[in-house]
Length: 388
Image (cartoon, rainbow, N blue to C red; front, side, top):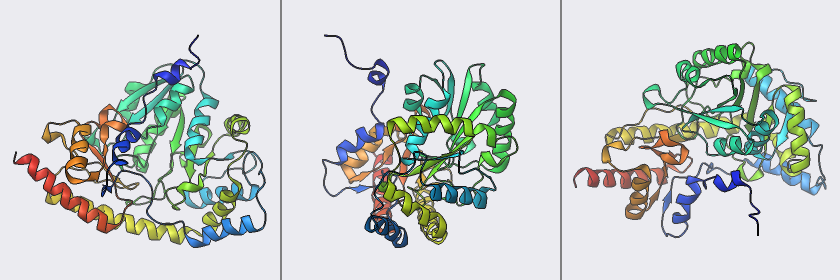
């Protein structure tokens, strides 16, 4: 018999995160700091709106692009937060999480052989989605001495005549790095000069702790060449509702909607009604959760300082990325031993690309009590390694 499987799919490696947490599922009494999921419940007024939609029998398909009411609120939100004006009729698509938007955005834009620049360490889906779209992924290894920001020199060194798309993953998962306005202006200048489109993943945009998040789409000349991706999972603690969106040029959104139409039909209806409430009345909830995350962030940074564990200060998302190179182990070896000996689960930095080797991703989307106990165990583990 012939092999019935796609060669590109066969070549994909399983997620490094999933592989590691298969171990966790077989162990008892583990403190897990590995999953990027808020420990907050979805705020009640948002849940109530979803419940009300069900009670009213609003359980039918919406339009492919999403509820008109939701698309309008997305446009209001982007204008309020970023000063960007989008047309809800043809420049917004509601998707099943931000991950679907990444997938169909690349498929809508890429021709075979086009190059997609991916700065790493980065979210694990970018690379496989680029491959599945027929692109050649071009990796930029970001550096801790630059606070894992993308520099114009690094971008220019990766650009070729085949470059089509730059993925801009800030605020960053796994590092927590951000790009400020002056950083983005330099990147935008290159994108305009080299005719590069940008896929800006801003799912953590509301969770920044240094000034205000700036979208590259808000800069002069960039709205027309940027797909802005956002969603509700992180800022509104709505991971299980599976809802995201993409804003961008009408001609690109039209083709993304076509793929979405054939593959998905529409995003979950109940989630869409709840999301309207989140955008209209959820700013205070986001502010409250962001304040709690910031407290946890400061606690972890102080804990690393006390145990003399190097870690640049992250100002976005809810992750820290401490360096463990001094111990002479790979990040997977360190994380595995830490799990086995101290019953604490973290993610090896190598799961997010080769440039993540020598680091750990630790999520602070967990209670302060769990974080305190985990840091006590990490300090004990680090001291044991230093005194062996």
